[in-house]
Image (cartoon, rainbow, N blue to C red):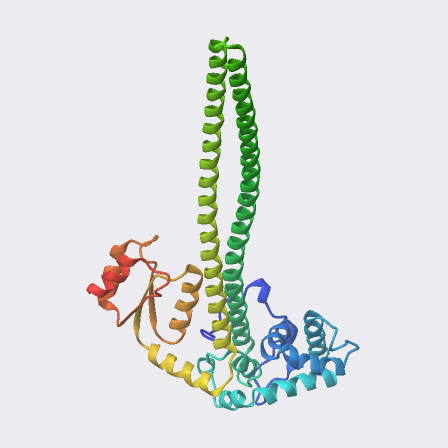
Length: 366
């Protein structure tokens, strides 16, 4: 977590005055934390599988049939109530994050309590003997806003996908109606051709039988040919309209495919971010430590990307001690700003799947 400094507390995250306590020489217990912090601690630091094993020991919930929400609510209530259940939850958290607690025990002020690994750092910070209520509130606020950023990115992409699916369904219905109409016109044309052919045969037979009335028969034949030409032109126009609609549907299907691919990329990015934030393995910790050391003190220019992700990247880089300048590649930001930002940059990065070609070539030429 980054930026764990005392700051203004919004009403949605405001602690109750009854549970605010001064720093002591021992770590805080779970039951001693402000009651509004229990939900974030339980939800962030303990998995649903761990809670399903622990909560039914102190409640009448069925571990196999109770919903995840019921298990979470029951765990929060047990933490607030205290007693044996709260002690068991506290013990489970201490055992899981013993390493992080030992590292945090050496810290003596708020500036030292920083880490990129959210669950262990969050629990160690919340119970640290030298952490006051303002620092706890700052940590809670950072975690609260991170959940908003991840959720907002997913919701926007899902709304775009739903809209494209609705448009695709409407176009399918329209094409089906046009194809039905085209079949009706084709049937009418075939029936007209058959009728005209029969009339032509009757005229020929009558002409040979009587040897007269050729002029009248010729007019009927010409009239039949005119009607045939009219039906043929109508059929060709209907076929052309159907072909245009099919091309439009193919275009929309391609757009839908691109939107689905984009959604998968965004979901993969969110999953990677969550994995990077919650992975407690030694390799992940070492990788994050190397990344933070590499970023510290560097001036980075990031060209392109997605607006929903750029704000989070800027916060992460600044939290690691670096400086990040974001340019959207010319969509809204003027490209002259990119040229002005490059001379001061130590590193220039751009996602190859989300940047315009001019901005990328500009960087190559430089």
